[in-house]
Image (tube, rainbow, N blue to C red):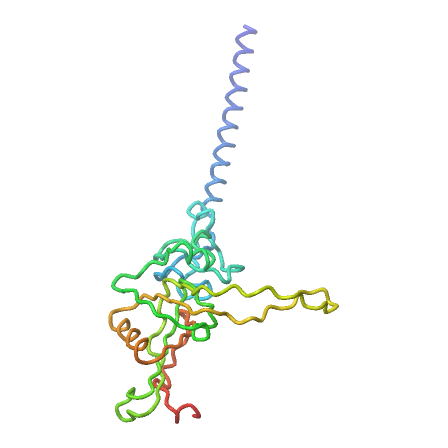
Length: 257
């Protein structure tokens, strides 16, 4: 009799403990589920972004969305803080989360040759000195504006006038090569300036640059013509640069307006 009573009490205790464990686990599962569903703000690509786009030009292509915690990638970015100077390693497609691995240094993009050529475009190369290439600071993945200057014939009404026009906008640079230069002879150490700081390097870039860009057939023809018979000058023109559309074609009278 006593043994049956003890067995019954033990069974009751085990049942209570088991029920408590089940309730505790269920509550923990609910908590974990709620934590996983808590919305997290992440950057999501809203519009397709070409490879090589700078972080500074990315903002118009992105949107901030709230996603469940369980759906957010570990390296997903919540903002672009501290990422200045980087570029997109590959083309970004609408709907994908912006993850840290997609942004790399421009040098890495150039060395990897990973600039993707948009469908329908072709590549053409031309050579310019550094002062015509933003001081030689253009790298693969940048976007540039191409100015074409003609000594005459640019305008039918003023065939004998010199003209300049920003003819081609926001062109993707796919490769940059610099001509080798002779190694300068070693210079004597400058005298101490008392501050202990090394003198600032103010030397100018040397050596011409060979640039390859991706353009359509019409603009490729314009570039080849200008390289043969006119002159070219480049600007660094990110995708979010403003295009005022004025003055269009620059002549002497417009310079002072």
